[in-house]
Structure formats: C-alpha cells, structure tokens
Image (spheres, rainbow, N blue to C red):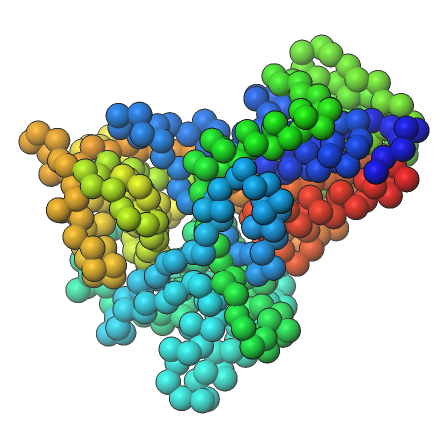
Length: 449
C-alpha cells in the first residue's frame, strides 16, 4: 500500500498494457493518472478496425504463446470478466508439400511436441528435437528460412515445392504469431516459442501452451471492467492527449509536454510509465533505440448465414491464405504477407478466389462444408465480404531492435517502459505484455517505497 508521502504516477498510453498497470497501481493505493491520444481503455487489436457487413463486429481471435498462464491469471482476479475471454487455442495446421501427407497439428500441447511426435523413428525424432532446441539459442540476426512461394497461386495438386512440413510449419507460425513475413523473424524468437524450458518438457502434466484471446470480449467487457475498477480506486483519466516530448535533466524527467499545448510538471518523487506502441515511444524518447518497422495485417471477412458452434482456426501453408478463423457468424481470413495486391485488381474476382480456396481448405482439414453455411448475394459466387487492412498488434522488429529489446531502458530514473516489447525471453504478445506489467508494478513499488 502506498504511503501518503508517495508521489504521483503518470501512465502514458491507455491500451491493454497501460490500462492493466494503471488499474493495479490505483488499487494498490497510488495516485494514478492515465493519458491516451484516443479514448483510454481500448485495445489496439481492434482500435480503428472496420465492422463487417450488417454491422457485425469482426476481430480476429489472437493466438498467442502463454506457457505460464499469465494472461488468464491476471483476468481471473476480476469475476465480472467472462472466463471465455481466454480459451485454449484449438487449432490445426494443414501443411501439404510435395508428396507428404497433410500435417494436422494441435497447438494445445505445444507445437514442438506435435512436430517431434510425427517423425518416424527415434533418430529422426532426436534430430528434430535437437534442431529445434538449437534454434532457441540461435542469434537474433539469424532469420527463419521460408520455403513458401511468393509467386502466383497454384492448385494443390501442383504444390510440389521442395522442403518439409517441419520447415513450413515454422514459416506459418512466424507469420501468424508475429504478424510479419517469416524471413524477417529471427530463429531465436521463434525458438523460444517452439521449445519450452526443460522443466516444462519434463513435467508430467502438460497445460496448453498456446491460448486464444477474444478481442470482442476484451473491448466490450474486459477493458470497461478495468475502467470501472480504475475509477472506483480513485484513478484519473485524460483522453485525447497525445504525448509530444519529455523534458529532463541528465537523470530525471521533469516535464511531460502534450500536443494540445498542455504541460505536466513532474515532482521529484513522481514516476512516469510509457506504455506506448514502439513507434510513438521512439518519437517521444529518441535515445531509446531503433524504431521498428510498421507492421500491417491484411485480412478478409466473409459473412456466414449459420453461426459456428465454437471458434476454430486453421493455419495453412499457402500462397494466398495463411490462417482461417471460424468465429461466430464470420469466416476471417488472414492473407499471406508476401502476396502482392494490385490496385487495379478486381475486388470481386479476388474475393471469389479467396473464398474458393477457403472452401477447399476447410473441407480438407476441418471437415467443414462452407457452402452450406454461405448466404451468397445475388449473382455472386461468394458471400458478402469486407477487406481489412489494419495495423497488426505486434510491430516488426528490425534486426538491431530485436537483438537489443531485452536491454532497452528509459534514460531517466523516474521513467519506466511497459509493453510486450520489453520482457526478457518472451515472444511479443499478450503474455509478454502481462509479464511486463508485473515487472513494472514491482519496480514502481520499490520506487515509491
């Protein structure tokens, strides 16, 4: 509990990281003010996202690695938030290359265990396990090798590119988990997700290491619940305030300057947390490091006549589609990042191509007949659709940023960095975000002690 002599806490950034940290600190008894350039307590996963046809909300379920259950543990303290916000990631990975049979891999028990168990013979399994373990300790500069074609679409019976389902699996995971082309993902980053620590490998009972978070429940229920908790604990909210610059001495930040010409003068015992997306963070604190590359997620949503009983996902190695999400009354399709879209391309023809591919993939791997669920518009060969080009949740890291991300620190003693970029030995994602929230919460408690 904070003492009456404790200074104020200023949290810049009202996304999931800033909202979660501000709520925890306010409930601990600290004087907390939360600033955001839009409306605080919104998720950047769905902020600015369009709505699907007939105003149905659409947001992809976010598949993430959370071996220690950090995300579920955080929300478990709030009984008003539905437990179905976080669910096991029931997925399959359909990979068909050359003469190999499709690899149907469940993510519930971890991708490494599934890939190793599919190898025939002790020697092959041992070799695969050692190869994956070596990647965990590879250099951040060593990129994932992609065997996926970036050329024109090919029928499945002609998909005879060389390579194994194992390498293709790594390629698909890199794109889906980190919202970046596989060849830009480091083997070390992917290796930390693929191979758990030795203690987890030797454990007798295996909990799911991949989970899925529902962005609609997050935005509509979870974040409003955090907002009510934050206000009830005495927290203050200031929206529409975009951070412009930070004045400082050599050791301490002294002033927060916002673009609406407002200024916050910091007292010696005040603390500031920057819970910002890396791009505005690098703009506010130029000395922090190299700005990451903007990352975008391109997807297409098809409206379905019949709702899906439960969310399911299919990861595929394909020139057009990289992931398909069956979610409520929509089929949400992640498009391959390496695919080139031309402005002059006919939108209906492209939608028809994507839809036909989804129909085949879902029939092949999910035993799901999409045609019977579709409600095609008049004279159309595909359901109502919406093309979405939005900012991806996690930015692409330049090689220099990826190598240094665990050592990034604010240049002043009273400024702290919070978000999914900073925890050591964590892949970017919700689990890394809440790991960072826990770490910064402990550091702030020491700062105010």
